[in-house]
Length: 388
Image 1 (cartoon, rainbow, N blue to C red):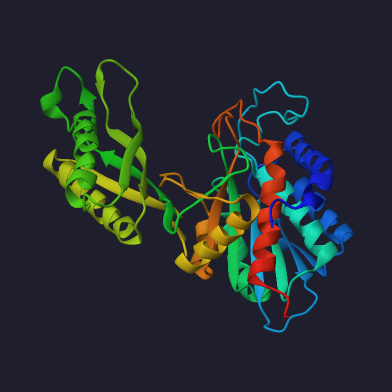
Image 2: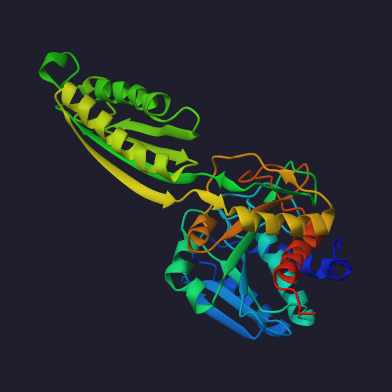
C-alpha cells in the first residue's frame, strides 16, 4: 500500500489549495478566511457533518465509513495559523499580507488533511468515523486547548488522535517518529525586582537592582545544572533583562527579567518553578530588595502514546517503506493538549533541504503532499478496517 495514485491525480489541486492559503496567511484565532475555505471544501466533499466555531475559529469535519460495527472514531488534526513575520522567498505564491507568513508549514498541513478528507469522503473504505480537525492558534495561542475545552473529544466521540508536522532537513516524503516525549513543555516567567534607586555616585545609599539582576541571571542557571536530574532534559533561558533607568548616572529602582522554561518531563516541569521562585526571593532578600515572580503556563510536554506510535509507524511503513527515529527537540506543540485527552501520536514528514521552520525564506515543499495525504488515509483504513 504505497503512496496512493489518487493523490498523484489530486496533487495539482491540493497544491493550489496550499498556495492560496500561503498567499493569505492569518494569525492566531483570526483564521476567518482559512476556516471558511476549509468548511466550504469539506461541505463540497460531502462530509456528513461540518461544524465551525470549535475553539473560536476551528473547523471539524465528520466522515462516516461504509459501516460502524465497533462505534469508533479517529481524529486527524492540522493547524491553520501563520506567524507574525515578513516573508522573504520571492515566490509567486508569497504572502500578500504584510507582517504575516506561513513559515511553519501549517498551510501544507491543512492542504494535506483537506486532500485526505476528500479521498475519505469519496471512498469510505473504513469501519467507523474519521474526524478531521482544523485548528487555529497553534503558534502561541493554544488553539488545541481551546478546541478541547469546547468539548472536541467527547462531542465527536474521538478515541484516538493523530497529527503530522513537516520537517526541513528530513528527506522529502520520508517519515520520522518516536514514542514517548517528542517535544517539550513551554512555559514563561517574568521576574520583577524592587530595590531602592539613587545616584550612581552613592551606591551605599541604594539597593542596586542591576547587581541583583546580574547575580540572579547567573544563579538561575544552577537550577538545571544542580536541581534537575542530569539524565533529564531541561532548558531555562533568560531572554530579556532591563532596568527602569536609561541614564548613565542613575542606579535603577526596578528591574525585570523574562525567560522560558522547557522540559521533556511533567515532573521536571512542576519542579523548576518552585526552585526558580526560591532562588529569586533569596537573592533579592540578600541584597536588601524584594521580588515578584509570575509564571505563564504554555503547552505541556508532547508525549506520543506508545501503542498509538506503533499505529502511526505502521501507516508510515505502508506508505513509504521505512521510518526514521526523530530526535528529541526543545520546541513545543499545542497538540500536546489533545494528547492529554486521548491517546495518539505526532509524526514528522520530510520537507527536504529547505530553509528551517520560522525562517523568512521557508516554504512548504508541495512534493511532500502525496506522502502526507497517504499517511492520513492509510492510518484511518488500518485503524478502522472494514469487516471481512
